[in-house]
Length: 113
Image 1 (cartoon, rainbow, N blue to C red):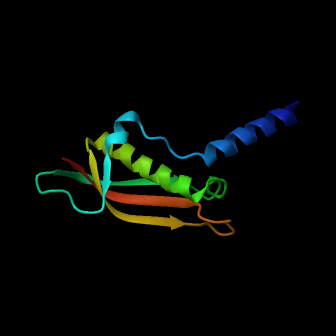
Image 2: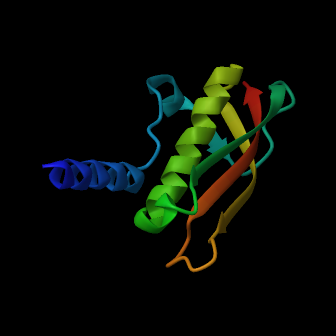
């Protein structure tokens, strides 16, 4: 009985790691841009979005790691009062003995335009 419960919990835990971080409703209107916004936009600060770690990253597809990191960045921009993020850097890494990418970070400057 306990083995079945542990197996079920492990499956739920691993599948949770397989999905991307969800964007809050307000974050769906946050723009991620490659060019610096107009001077009329107010700079609010830097934010870092991430998804993955040494354990769950192996069980999450690379595109889901990227989607989750971008959604995490958008969520943080909303928390800061922003609606536009000038993306500065995107990095993907893997831990030792990993099967592929295990973590993705997206760094950006948050603006209110």
